[in-house]
Image (cartoon, rainbow, N blue to C red; front, side):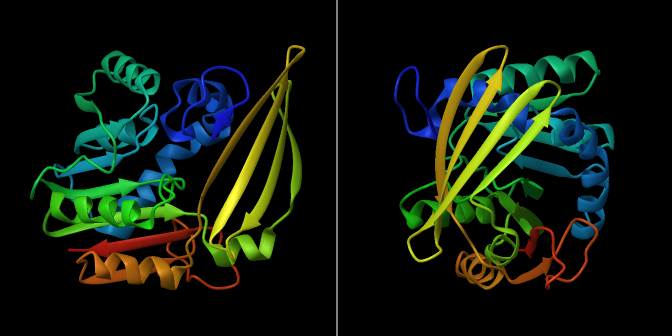
Length: 253
């Protein structure tokens, strides 16, 4: 993703980009949903209270905070300084002990340390080189203890094929938001352009990332060492079929 204004960087490394899209990524509905999502994730994964959990690409920490509130020992990793600073301030205000670390998910690894890892809301598939996706999952595998679990949540290719629209308008709290999408590379890649209209301003943000089907993600996880992979259609654990809303993979080491 690149913002039209400001210094040009690869989108996932651009602090300006993440600051600009934060009102969309972390609106009231999304923030409120975190508690129920973590409740379901804990159930799907079999996480046990007191276990060590890595929130990989934690953003402003909405899932990290819920995990800590439920008695887990949490480490949140993200690349965006402003998000981490906000997450740390919120945790301190709520009296929650969470370790937040700034690092690239292609590098971060703590051998045999975590009981579970979560990677939520399509915070995966960012990199043009598929070897980088493999590196992320390998780091995750090696960071887990034996028997540990990874929960990865993306927009599955099959679901996107069912609901795809090239343009979509939304209004949220006085803010107009236009999403434009284009598929490429034989359905393996999606280009997105977000235009936000607010207070007389027009800001544009662009990003693209890889798409995975359930079968493709399962194969990749197993190639990276995971022994079993279960696929679900949402956080409640429904089947991944024509009614699926999201692609949730639960992979066990």
